[in-house]
Length: 123
Image (tube, rainbow, N blue to C red):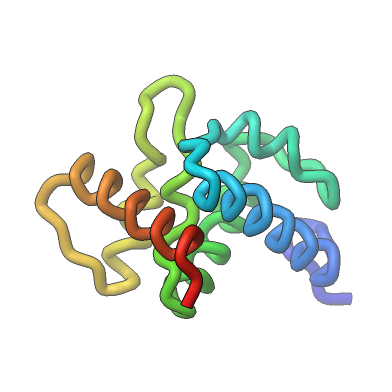
């Protein structure tokens, strides 16, 4: 059986769908970001800790997929309760996706706007 971090692929896919639903709703209604811890507690299909590599991988996969369909990096809506903006991996993924920026904070704010617009005004 193929697994990711010990979870079968169907369960992994359900967790990603839950994340899209949770973050997409926040973006759509303008609720603002959520912490990694709060997001981890809302995911029901699998147990993941806020700072597990599995959480970061789930978020990277969701963001890459959402970016590919034109809705931006949805994980912009997940922040650190300690430092505020998303973890460094968010910005590393942005670079891998071909995004360029000089100012991380400005990029993050613009990405949140982009994602919010995409969810409030679907094409």
